[in-house]
Image (tube, rainbow, N blue to C red; front, side, top):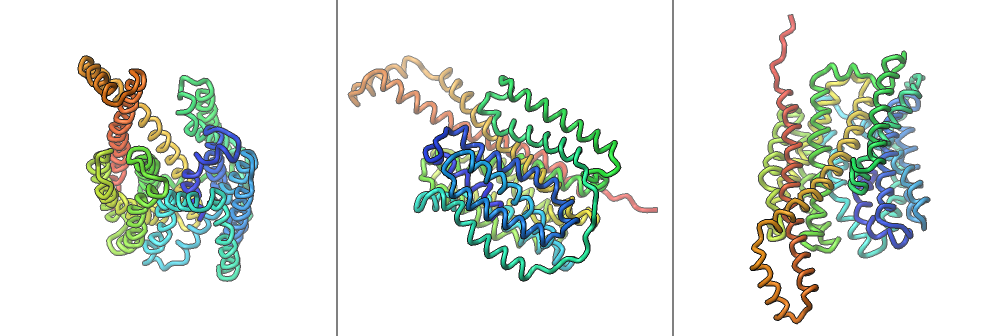
Length: 481
């Protein structure tokens, strides 16, 4: 429910400009506010869990998320819905981390992979399912149902959690480093806003983007200084002394955040804008590979228990790389829909096999007392990496569309184009200006179509970079003396 809201709202955002009396740049804050709040909420999760217990924070997260969903559905203006989405984001962080901790803790050590395979049904299946559900609810009901549907589900979750989740007995009164939290939160907010608005403002041609980058870098530097000088750090960086833990986090950051999140963003755009499918049909096409994510998530968990996390990660990464570099870039306007759906299925398999073994590797590499922090770091890099991935996809798509348009104009035979336009004008009985504009729109569309090849390829290159850290998992181990 919580992760679904990160993508299901993407579908309805273009339809909110009228009801909320704003423009596209205004409604983008509905997405941005959620991601910022969730990233900041993650930073306090470890302290809250140790202080009050996973069950209490989970139930609080479900209650806040459900109430915020109700507020979103009832909103008639932009400001209230942004405020409600902020509370939703905080609550998502509480739900994600606590449920992760509890599920991993309840299973026997020999079934940790299966536990994460089941958990991955939500983490990797839900974002891909978002466009389908959002498209259906918007087309057959209205945009408010996207939020209202969370309320009864949240109520059932709260009741079931209160009744059946085991009580916890041991709590720790840990000090909280507010100064480090402030600087890291400020750095995260500045970075996510910069990535979210970069394309809109023209990246570094904009003073605002330059200021946001400066604030982010300075805040990260001050955060590190605060951590070095404080007796009680916000994040225990000794976790990164374990190379398996560090490799797992970097695999998660680059393969999932920088690469897979680009395809999450691009595939619905491809179906809607290149294949010209209605929103619901585009969602159904996306559901084809989402289904395989759901099927292979528990399978990957079982393989992690049987073969080990490292081998399963290597298999998943290989399947994903082959798909990203050799299959997906060939999607274009002329690809039959059935073929396009088949091409995306290996992506769903690789995605489904990815999450569970990486999570098992990271959590097994961290001390049991630091499992909450390990999950917080995983989810933090998911948000930041995913924001980078979405920004890269948007920027690359615009860049390659313009580049292909310029090249198209450069190499075309101008005299033949003039003859063609003249014949078109005569046959269709339209003015010279309209004929030229129609031809220009055709060129723009084809440059957009060609741009997908380049953008898909660049998304795959980030996965190639992430695969280097997969190789590190198979380094020779030093024998202890």
